[in-house]
Image 1 (cartoon, rainbow, N blue to C red):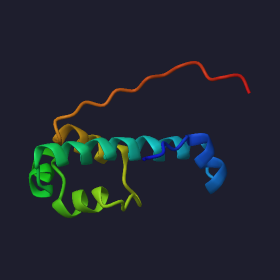
Image 2 (image 1 turned 30 degrees about the vertical axis):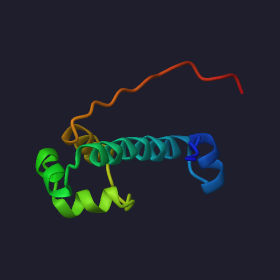
Image 3 (image 1 turned 135 degrees about the horizontal axis):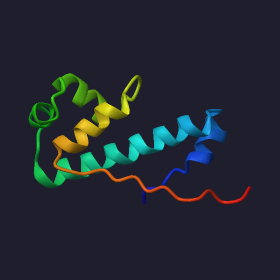
Image 4 (image 1 turned 30 degrees about the horizontal axis):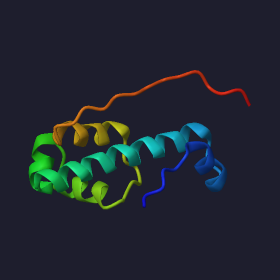
Length: 96
């Protein structure tokens, strides 16, 4: 069973700001969605790279978990290349 990581928990465990940890969680969730679509559709890294306008080596690196210096822009290009749409939901923060 896969456990969902909360950005606040990640921030505390890794000593990151809440914003940086939230960005990491968002990227991970988007990449997970791309990986699920690849598994369902049989899309190759080469095909995804062409659709996303990214180098194949970058696609392979990102999808294998190498997130160092990976921008949200690149991840969103992968989402679009996989035929997916990303949505962001904003809500009022809980009282501390």
